[in-house]
Every structure is written in structure tokens, then in C-alpha cells.
Length: 318
Image (spheres, one colour):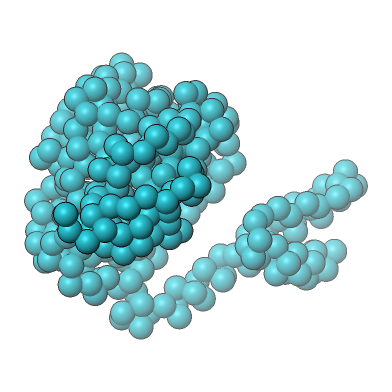
């Protein structure tokens, strides 16, 4: 037997020894971890790792499922990959985009405007996803030269992915494979499709809504909620992206590399100021009915700056 290393399991509050190079999947099969759903990955010294990760030094390990934030992100990424493969199988040669997080799901669409998805089409895609999940196909991660990864994505028609990789400046890239389908993700995936049994795919506007399970109740999918105003904001954002010729991170990276970022910032600031002015005009129009103005947003989202700018515009509109 080779050299042994100590592994401390935070879930079990116990320590065990394993041979150097043992992967998390092998370790998982040796311990009795009781979670609310299938194990998707692990926190190794508080860093997210896949079950294929090999241990070479003493570590603290906590296996995670869908109820853990890291596990939930892995689940959703993996579902997106399954959806992409299902669309590619049913609509070969057609572009596919995952666009926005809205209405407790992810809005997705086909880029071919000649294809109008119907509820029957969505059911067909959903059935194909279930077949892929039932087959329990493994997600295989491969570290390859970025030039090779770009060639793979170009062959699949993933122009946004190639644009991103061309501007990242990394010599090597991690590419995931699902049989004949390849993709790139900013983060890890689940071990295989078989753990992704809970999901829903719904007809949504001109596309579809991919709905994942609830974090606190993994056997039930999230309830869809209407967010009409949010959709309008995303539509406006999309239009302005076309105006600026910046529709993805690769485009933004090129803008920075070509020293055009200052122009983009000025245009964005002008749009922001214009929108605040419109809000101030609307408040002035209905000032006899408005008693309170509420500004919401997470920490460091710019609420104070927005409030100060709105106050100035309100003075101008008075």
C-alpha cells in the first residue's frame, strides 16, 4: 500500500486515511453520507471540487447536494448542458442561447427567427432531455489547448464561446463533453446526467423557461412568477447591446483591448442619466398621488448613488 493521507469529513465529524491520489468518487463510496439528494460535488478546504478530483494532501471535505449553493449551481449548469444537447439533437445546425434569469427560471431561445417554438415543440425537447438524463451519461471534463477548444466550438457554431476564449489570454481551457457535444462553463458540473431528474421546461414567450428544483425542497421545481417589467428591462438591455456592438463578454474584452472602453462608459452613463430623468418626470407628473419612493437592490448595487442622482433630477423637474 502506498502513502496514506488523512481526510477529515465535516459531515461526519470523523477522520479517515486514504491512499495518495484517491478521487472523491471513491472516497464517497466508502463513507455513509446522508444528504437530501444525490451528491453533486464537494467542498474541499472550502473550495468547490468535482467528484473526479484526486486527493494528494490532507484535506477537509464536505460533500454537497442541491441544497448547498455550490451544489445548486452545479445542478443548474448541468441542466443547461443537457438542454443544449437536446436542442442540438432535435434542431441540428440551429443556434441556441441561454439569456436571462427571470421568473424563477432561465430564459432560453433558438437564434433562428424562422423557427417559432410551440408548446408541442417544448414538450419534445423536454422528452429528449429526460431520455438523456435516464441514460445517465457522464459529463467528461478535459483540459486542452485553448486553440483546440476554439476549433471545437467553431465547428459547433458557438461564436460567443470562441470570442470569449480568444480574448481570455489563457493557454489552456477546460472543456466539458456530453457524448458528441462540447461546451465551456465557468464552474463545475455534476458527475453525470442521472442526478438531474427534477426540472421543468415551459413554453415562455418566443422561447422556453428552464426551471430548476427548489433549494429547500429538492423534489419540487420552483414556481413560475410573472416579471413583465424585468423582461422589458432585459429587452432594452439587449437593444443597447446591439447599438454598442457588445452582446457578450468576448465583445466587451475586445472593446477593452482596443482602448474603446471609455466611450462605452460615457454612453452607458448617458443612458443611465436619461432613464433617471424619465423617472423624475414621471414622479413629477403623478406627484399628488405619490407619497413614497422606494429604491431596492443588494449591497453595493448603487442605491445611494442612484438616490442622489434622482434627487438632482427631481429638483430640475420641479
